[in-house]
Image (cartoon, rainbow, N blue to C red; front, top):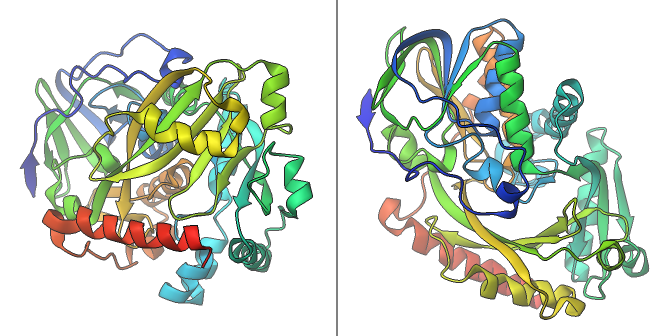
Amino acid sequence: MESRVNGYAGDGSYPASYYVASANLTPTRRSLSGVVETDVCVVGAGYSGLSTALHLAEKGYSVVVVEGARVGWGASGRNGGQIVNGLNASLHTIEKRYGPEFGGFVGGMVQEGGEIIRETVRKYGIECDLKSGNLFAVFNARQMRELEAKQELWRKYGMDDHELLGREEIRRHVGTDVYIGGMIDHSGGHMHPLNLSLGEAAAVERNGGEIYELSPVTSVNCEGDNPGITTAEGEVRCRKLVICGNAYLGKVVRPLTPRIMPVSTQMIATEPLGADRASELLPTDLCVEDTRYVLDYYRLSADKRLLFGGGTVYGGTDPSDIRSKLRPNMEKIFPGLAGVRIDYAWSGNFALSFSRVPQMGRLGPNTYFAHGYSGHGVTASHVFGRILSEAIDGDTRRFDVFSKVRWFPFPGGRRFREQYCMIGSWWYAMRDSLGV
């Protein structure tokens, strides 16, 4: 099984964003050249790849990470920076679709990703402005009932970190009158996502791993006992291969292409607001997301900007004017920000699976993959990296459970899947607006 593709990231430079402007950047690492042999080769230096590589390097494996652009260039360096526990598909949906046994399995690990992040940040002293707590905000009674059911369900699996809020209580955390209530997950949090990626990459290297940047993979051999990859100028031969390209993998591994669809989401960063004005917006410095199908999410940066995200574009294309798209949503929540200067606007892709459940499996006896976090990749990717490392180290119990979960192709195939999902998005957005 082999396929080829050209590079995907232009000259590999980071796209302009607030995160890049405030990053703990390091010099560009060398690109892959010549033949390199290693125990494990990981394709992709985002959260999935770095988590896998770090767990394996800590166990003593020789690990090589090959990245087509720069560390954290994709979704891992552009996302909302919110540590939101769970998967895109709710535990209720997972139980209903896959049965109580798999629901219980997922319920036992939904907080693990946040724990991995905190443990890694502490262990390696990663400077990424890590803070605790995230808040789910609701606009209507139906959404509030859903939060109440979520709290009850999560308690069933031993998670009791959730605090329900009424209209007056949520007002103490968010300076707006648009919400009727919400729920705090005290085990959630937020951080600077690109700095987390860069810190994890440094931790991989500290444990003896090698990372090659600006090295788009052009060919992947997934078959046989000795898989490997090639780039324009180099080759990696390995005993185990892990594919973690996610939304930016392109067609380099064709069996994975129909499993996911790239979806673009957008963010803006205001000018620095000052401590007093920022405190009026988010007095307790929690990160916030609402519970609609097409949601808004936001938080404060370390230098007191409002970082505001939302919107989706199926197929992974960028809107022509991100500022104009997101500003009305931001000003609806915070009317006092009308006319505030927007210093940064950027976009990035996440990989959507049709079931909204991430996928993990094998493409050959020694080739593994993980992808499809569907917009909840910050925590899930760190868990999947640990599970992949467990499988490569000989413990396949958790890997086997996920690898057996059935995946579903997008209706309409590759040609019409964007249109299908757009229609679905319109439908759910209408339901959100009507409160039904």
